[in-house]
Amino acid sequence: MALIVQKYGGSSVGDADKIKHVARRIIETQAAGNQVCVVVSAMGDTTDELMDLANQVASRPEGRELDMLLTAGERISMALVSMAINDLGAKSLSFTGSQAGIITDEVHGNARIAEVTPDRVAEALAGGNIAIVAGFQGFNRNSKDITTLGRGGSDTTAVALAAALKADVCEIYSDVDGIYTADPRIIPTARKLDAIDVESMLELAAAGAKILHIRAVEFARRHKVNLVVRSTFSTDPGTVVISDENGAKQMEESIVSGVATDKSQAKITVIGIPDVPGKAAAVFTTVAEAGANIDMIVQNTPTGSDVTDAVSDITFTLPKGDLKHVLDALAQNKDVLGYRELESDEQIGKLSVVGAGMRTHSGVSAILFRALAEAGINVEMISTSEIRISVITSLDQVDDAARAVHKAFDLDSDTVATVYAGTGR
Ligand code: ASP
Ligand code: MG
Image (cartoon, rainbow, N blue to C red; front, side, top):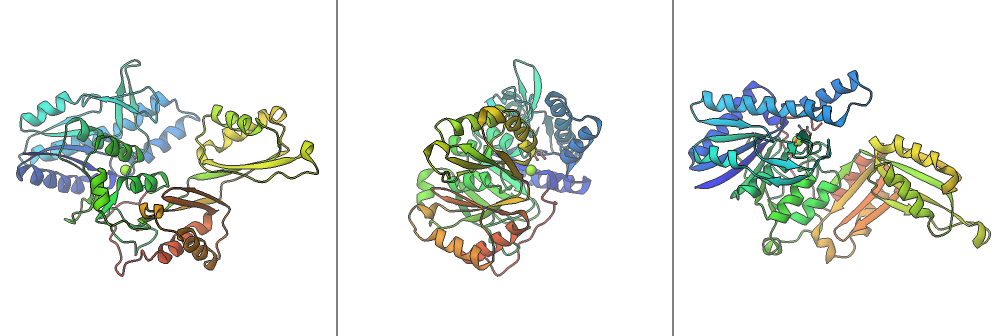
């Protein structure tokens, strides 16, 4: 008997009919001779709606209370899915994150899983039940409070449970047939991949691809979880994320596996910083103390008449949500940091191309920059890793940039991908 962990995203449990559909699918999986543990997200756009409500009643809702509020979304879907399964004659029990033994650190809104002790889930499965677990949430032992794992965190719940239960496979169900060479909502001719190596998937997730939560991919890599991304609404076998090195070696290495865009970033330029050792450290210490996670950094060559009055500019990108308080922190430290002025821009987009084959193939950047030039797209910043190249463009050009680059790397297919549900919000 195999043990399968399935995760259903918000659009898969968006209304009563979809919940009944999911319930039938789960029962079929059990009837085929498997033990089934299911992780669910909140229905549809519930999490966003709860967030909007919180922001209407408070200007800065406390992390603890936000987590209490948002975790309710997953509790609603876990109970409804469980009821639907029981109604169809199979046995099911639902569990909150803390009942399922998802133990986290204390960081509200972005907690990390410290330990998974799914005794009650294992017991339920042994008793012939289907176990339904609320995704995205955990429990901290010190504070005795409920936490959340960051937006999109139900994937991580599923992979963590799969590792702890030693499941044979963890299936992430979504509203598209698997992992595509680009988001089919932006590039309808994106091609579905049968398999992808975990390193490329990590880079794609970090670059803004929303198909899998980055922590879930990290967890799968570390614990060698068999991960598959499939659709709730079709029988397509989906995309396998290959975590073990031998498996990845057997794959034919594509130069580029995919293109991702990220519209959630902003950039700050600190202009006229004295070109002396320690100034960059001071700037980034200020940014770090403000709590922002920065991504790309560029420092231009110093200008000035001689060494003593040379100044340079530093530009970096950060999440839009951190822009205001980082600007405030830098402004408060203007005298100590000694810069001339600050500039910021929220109208930027990041485009990334990712592929394990970049390690061994040359000429990838030439193709990329030629495609961007031919499409008339201006590149503002560039950064690279061993298997990724990212560029910053203006926000209104980033989708066009993605389409041009997708085409230049021959990733387009002749059919149009099906998006079964969901707003991609
Ligand atoms: N409901 C949560 C969110 O919207 C968690 C998830 O969907 O995985 O971010
Ligand atoms: Mg999700």
